[in-house]
Amino acid sequence: QVHCQYCSAGAQCIMANTYATSRHVLERAGIGSHVESINVKAMDLVRSAIAKQPKAVVKPLIGASLSCHRGGDENAFGVWPDSDSLQRSFNEQASILVKSGAEAIFLEMIFCQSLAMYAWRAAVETGLPVFVCLGDVRLDETGQPYMWWSPSNPKSLKASDREKIPVVEGLKPLLEHPSVVGVFVHHTSIADTGPALKAVREAGWKGPLGAYPDQGEHVWPNWTFQDIPVENFIAAAQGWLDEYDCRMIGGCCGLGPRYIKALHEWKHSGAWKDGGAGYHSSKL
Image (cartoon, rainbow, N blue to C red; front, top):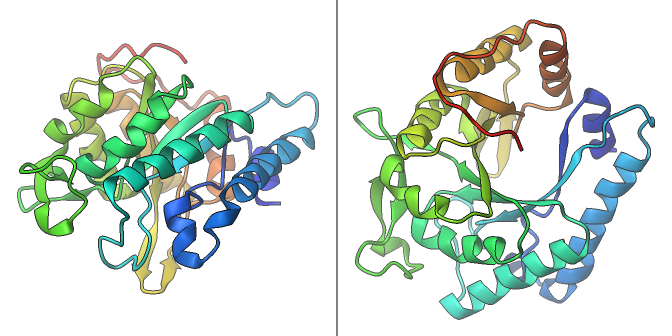
């Protein structure tokens, strides 16, 4: 039903709910042995929703999330397996997603370069188009977007080994593969999305750029969503288009089908104005 709502709202990409369905996450819930059936079912639900749409509707891209989701306590950096087990977990999920009909991999919740490389390797080896998705981007005391990395041991999964690194520098290794066709900023506040998009461009990315921000506050264990006027969201999207040639726009937590419908209407009403940022993103 959720996928159908987004299709009806005019979404041009529907992502399977595989955000937290890798083995190392499911094992923390005691259901690691169901990793294949859960991922296959998630992909089946996307296809089923698309199949129910009127024939005149343009078929959305079928995306699948391969996420740097941490097992354990979401208020901490999480509980990680050893590095070999983690790589096998991402490889396994990526393989299942490909066999289940994914048309693109969305490498989500990239908040730490060292950790992201495990999921990145699994994603690019599938041969599918890969979208690198910076997640939960924050600004430092100078207003610059940052992520994390482990400079003393790039393969380390220990939170104690991590240090801040500007997105401008930390993102670069994740862009260096021909399978990477686009970059998103997601699960980030609307206010911080603009600076994060700017950092992506300053990192040297000249290709397709997108954003699907969130709106609300997470106070453990629940989200508190705060509606914003649709026109404010559209104004922010127009600003991202103008300044950074950000042409792929959607919603994360708290920005549901109502906002997607507004984006769709904005895009097709003639109100969408091509930006003059000077970037020349190739079309997907």
